[in-house]
Image (cartoon, helix red, strand yellow):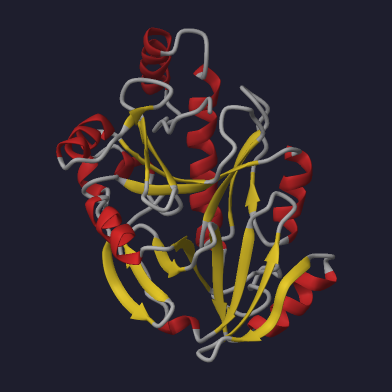
Length: 306
């Protein structure tokens, strides 16, 4: 993977600082991508502010998959996974028969008991069945449609890049809402101060990173599902996209083949050192100050400095 999160403010002083830093650390790679990734995050912030919690369509008539979202992670050992995410700064916020919800106040995750391995994007809405019908009209294949689990009704479809998306029929007001900042709603000024990052261990959620085979096709696909972002071509085709509830990163490259939950912070090296002191194995990733840690169930967590 050839990128890392950088808090690039569009002013002359910080541009000069970043160029010097990148030339020293990264030499000839990533100098453009660092600035572009910050711009993409800023765009995500602006777009998320425009999105409304309505039903199938927001006030701007853009299609919406739901009115609340979480990242659902399959694990065959919930207790072991829970301990791991607690070390990463997450706390349990709710327990349901199929698993537990946890949050670090920048993103909501669900540890779901399953012998299968997957990271699923889950949306909640009172009109989830109608949303599923609209998604099906777009030509999507459903793994299950309006399945009654005994607790709620859900539909699950798979994207061309192999990402499962669950549409759960449930009042979104009952879903826990993280109280802190993340890559979608943190201002430029707030990104400068490590105290504004809600997760004391990892910083703030930036995106669910997704490797894609055909960037243009994947970008167009997610745009139809209500996500917006800006395309970039250097150092490879990529974009950060958001629907106001979750941010995803589309990356057409050859360095990683798995989905990853990505965090960023200005003092990430100190955070990584703290995680290592707690017994976690954090591997340096791409450059000093960045790292990757793998959970017991196999989820990759990217930790990027700024």
